[in-house]
Image 1 (cartoon, rainbow, N blue to C red):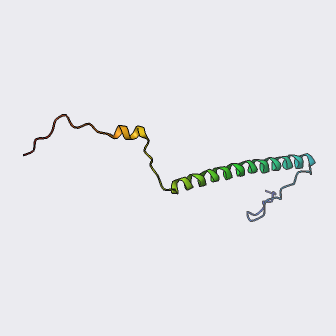
Image 2 (spheres, rainbow, N blue to C red; image 1 turned 180 degrees about the vertical axis):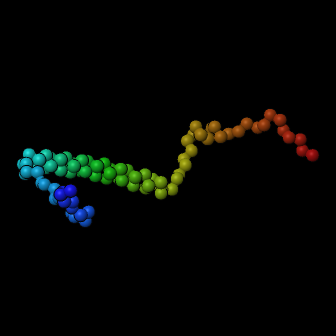
Image 3 (spheres, one colour; image 1 turned 45 degrees about the vertical axis):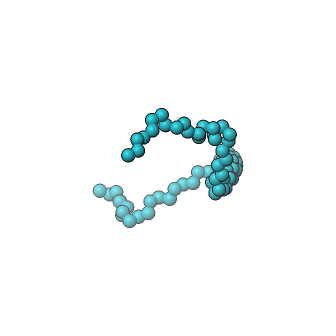
Amino acid sequence: MSQEHEPPSASPPARLLPPFDPSRIIGIIKRKALIKELAAVYHTKCLAKCQELMELQKKWDEPYIYVKTPDDSRKEKRRPPKRLKKSR
């Protein structure tokens, strides 16, 4: 048994870095640009939705005014009941 074993406390071997490849940098730059573009689109949509919510909030806070139209007032007229209740 001539093989030497490393003690368990020994550090693992360092990872070897792959050689520098400029084409990978180009891909990273393109992905970064796409992410920025996507973020800008989401930001624009978010601002539009916030504006819409603010408008709805303003409408909600306004006092409600019910205006009767002539058609509505005609419908509200009641007919007298057909049978009158007997009074005692």
